[in-house]
Length: 112
Image 1 (cartoon, rainbow, N blue to C red):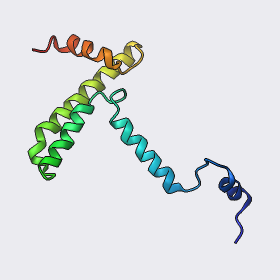
Image 2: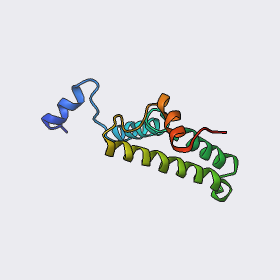
Image 3: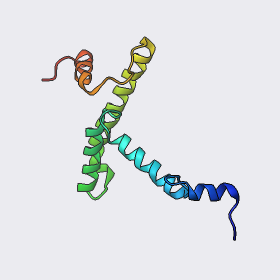
């Protein structure tokens, strides 16, 4: 069975994705790294703590409710910061890692 001209070209070009499953896997990998990249997700620590709690407690969600609430609060806080900065025209919308502690202190005061 011969392939149409376009498909032949796809198979012969090195580095070109031809398998849609491979492309999906690559996308999932990018999503994973983006979610666990502190530069793009200021709540990485809270996320990892939630997953660790689930692992430690046999995935019984009720035992980890405090961790989930903490993660949710973190996401809500940083989402509000991004919204405020967008409205004010401040870029980047999400503060850099170095500036985040300053932003927290400005909102809540010094941490005891």
